[in-house]
Length: 206
Image (cartoon, rainbow, N blue to C red; front, side):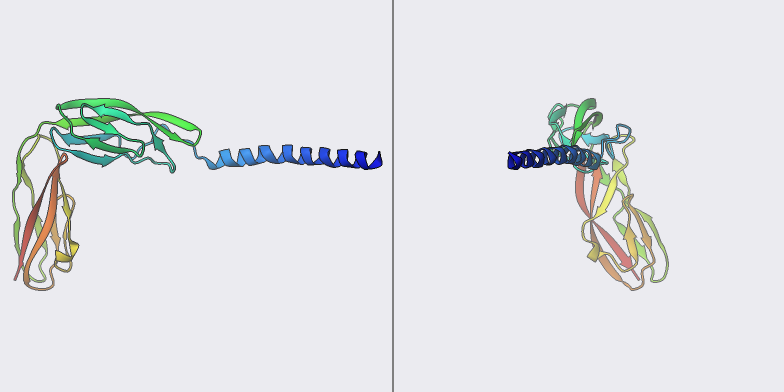
């Protein structure tokens, strides 16, 4: 009998210890899951694209460990569970769709806007820039055409082609102070609302 009483006491103590531990583990796990902030769930919630041009962008959440629920953003454009926005927009216009984001046990609906612009041809305005050693460069690549009000972006695709101390910014500005003469041909990707093309910018330094 005495052994049975001791066994019962030991079992009861184990059950009590387990009941105290489980809630604490649950509370710790829930505290580690940062809830979504509905005021700033995404870094960017508006995207500008061009009709008939394939889209390949991504929704960037402000919190880690976020999953998305697949949905349509516009005719021909979807977002998948990783936040990738893909497809080819078929009609110009402004489209707004609710997208569900979940982090742990916390979910939030964020409205995402896709502005589909008409496909208006464009071309670079200037691609050759002369300069002198030791003198500051101050030029702009620029774009003619394209949809009204859209700001083009410029990306150097091979920085090794740039002369030392010379830069081409995302706004197309050519600057810096070259330190050696020579001719450089720099590949640059220009995008106007997702309508992109590669060009070669020539820098002639004497």
